[in-house]
Image 1 (cartoon, rainbow, N blue to C red):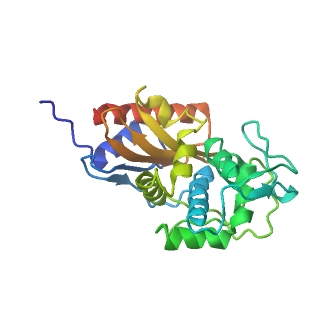
Image 2 (cartoon, helix red, strand yellow):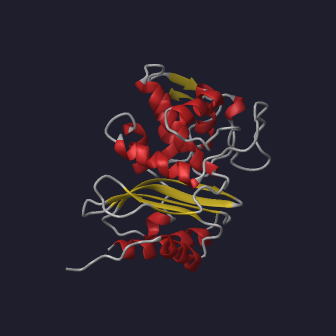
Length: 266
């Protein structure tokens, strides 16, 4: 019988270094009945989360559905205070009207920045923070300002600093989403599974693997993380944060890391 090697912290750190992932914060944690230890490298590092902050916003919204506070079909409208550039074509232009459900899906699956800013105002920063702390146990996560797709930064008079959502909190949240993927967090999981940005970790995985995930990119941050399901039924949370600039070269480094990790998983 072939015995798969035990993946330990030193292996993860060495694989990240070999791939050129700078200042990496990494978590690999088995889910459900999958054997093996949870492994992390500098997961508490306070790296700017970029668009990874969108996942706790989506999770907070899903919990307001569960509480009956809001409904997926509730309508919203894009206003001038929400506008910022997006990397993909977007219907979220001034005056656009749609539902909370569609807005949250666009925020995750397409990483739509305007959709994110609409939801930040719809939910409120304090409310998002309270849900993250009290319901999700994400004590290092905070939504402090709206997102900007390019410089200059969006005009945000209510801003109180930079957003925070370290790799450790991201991993904990993905684990929670995985546990409730058919329940409370079904819309979050579905949006993660519909991700259109798949050039990082996804590019180093095997064809039969499923990776429901979110990426984050700025001029000084490049991240990827989500729920990895293998064809043999094993599943993991996998998160990698770096201080690399967003670029095709950085994406290739993530893919190289994922190939090494995937080979070790067997």
